[in-house]
Image 1: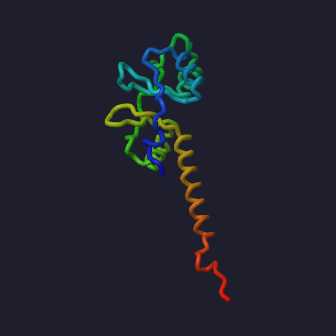
Image 2 (image 1 turned 60 degrees about the vertical axis):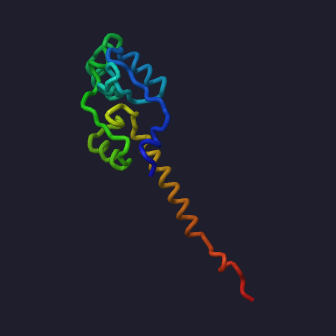
Image 3 (image 1 turned 90 degrees about the vertical axis):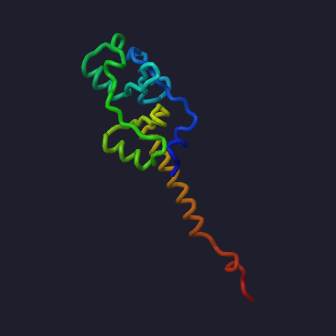
Length: 150
């Protein structure tokens, strides 16, 4: 199975600053087709703002997304992983915490964010490769068996 580093790769980690209006953060998330953004305060990770936060803490609470800032409604109890951890450990942590996004740290600093979709895609790719190898093994005919004896 691939590493967290290979999944995160060189892709840009989209973040928003504390004080960013919710409507702006939601617009960034919509434009980038992402369901969560880490929230930073002066370069320090302060929280995560997710689609679930929009629904539970903005819409359901009747707050105005134009005047509410992300730091007022973001999740601050972060579920994190180290970039060196296995994908299996990350998936297990996400399932236990019932979250769909996992902040990835490298030496205590923000390295990226993983979504459940990222992990499932990596797992599917890994399984597809295993199936291909198993099919090749099952259908392999040694060269000495292909010669017809007369």
